[in-house]
Image 1: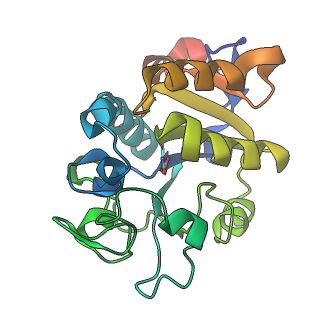
Image 2 (image 1 turned 180 degrees about the horizontal axis):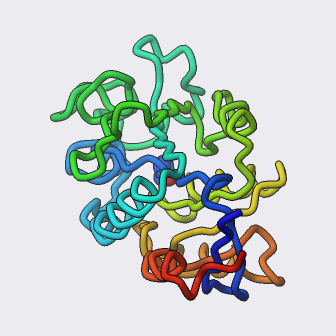
Length: 228
Ligand code: C5J
C-alpha cells in the first residue's frame, strides 16, 4: 500500500492513490463561458474562473500518480426526453435548455457549450460521465465504474460548489465513499454559497467528507505524506 496523508478540515485524512479517483464535475463551457446555461440563469460566469488552475493542478497530479480520472458533464438528449419540465422552465424564456445560443443548443449533449473547457480536456481513456441531473450518480454508470476499479476515496472538484459538487458528494457519502473536496478547485456564482457549501461538508466532524486545497493534495505526495 502507498497510503497518503492529506491535511484537511476537519482534520487530516488518508487515501490510497490506487483506490482513489479524481472526479472533475461539469467544467463545461455551458457553465464557465458566456452564452451558456450558467449565463442563461442570470449568473456572472467569470466568477468560476478561479477554479480552473487548481483543477488543472489536480488533473496533472492524478495523471502523474496513475489515479483514475473521471470527468462529468451535465446535459440532455437532443430531444430533451430526459429533461424534466420543471428544469426546462427555468431561465429567460429565450435562453432555456434546448434553445439555440452562441455555443449551440443550451445544455444539450454534442453541442459546443456542452463540452469540457479546453484547459481541462479529458485524455483518451479517462471516462466522461454524461448526467442529466445534478448528482453524478443519478442515472449514470459512475457507481459501477468505481466499484469495478475498487475505488474507495474520491478527490472532488469542479462546479458549482453548492449544486453539482454538493449533490455528488452527498450521493457518494451515502454510498460509502470517502470524499475529499478540493475547495480552491471548486467554484460558485455565489461566493457565500461556495464558502458555506464547503463548511457544510466538513461540519459535524466531516458529515459529508473532508475539505482540502490543491496545495494540500500536492503536498500529500511529498515524502511527508507517505504513511505506509
Ligand atoms: C448547475 C452545476 N449549477 N453543474 N449545475 O446548474 O452545478
